[in-house]
Image 1 (cartoon, rainbow, N blue to C red):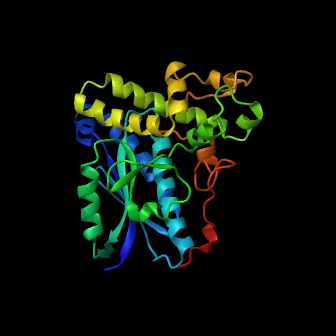
Image 2: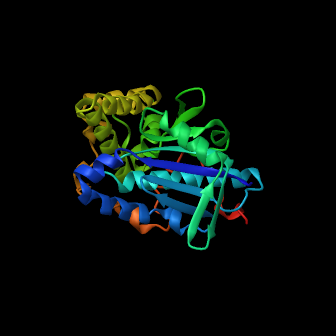
Image 3: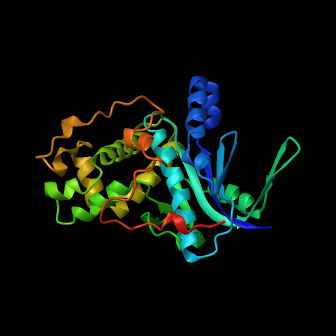
Length: 289
């Protein structure tokens, strides 16, 4: 059986969503149907109930191929994260590597393998939200920041602009306007919104076990980007402290739930891209079937 990279995404609280807020289920599936993974010829997507599974069709042959696959699988998760912004719907995911088979037999979709079973079991014991990556895949990750979570997996930070802000603000705030111009300010604001939402859920969710999952994610951020996260908390997530001379009023962040930000709709794959000065990804043209 062929080994593949597997992106396993679990929509959290799906049963409660169906029972208590069924009007959100249709828009959720619409957002999943618009994931860029469906459009990329090198990957296959399977959606079943509250789970999204994305895997590479062809076997990577070179080191660059492996980094290419890992990069895109992370970006598919990033795309879904942005598309669910403000909806109150969250996922927990695992990027792993293992045996997996998928084929169609008549009218039946058949998919199975040790990689899928291991992903299912491992994802369930991660008491947090967001994307996590096993050690095998992390060794092929050259784009996204990560941090240790436990002995088996690392947390993946899909908020690339927060990482960039941490780099350029090493000397403290405010930062020079020139440094801000090097960033994707629109998406920095969306990422700040996502962080504020995580913080609020950590404080206010009615269920203690759910609050703990958000607290775990928050601790991941705080331990990795301590200066940025502490400043955001102190400033109640208002961005003006970052660069007071910047016009922060020109951004329209009031998009309805399940609607992607403009840049995510406009470019071909729908990702925020790699801000100037951050890790560079592999050349997509190197991946060959």
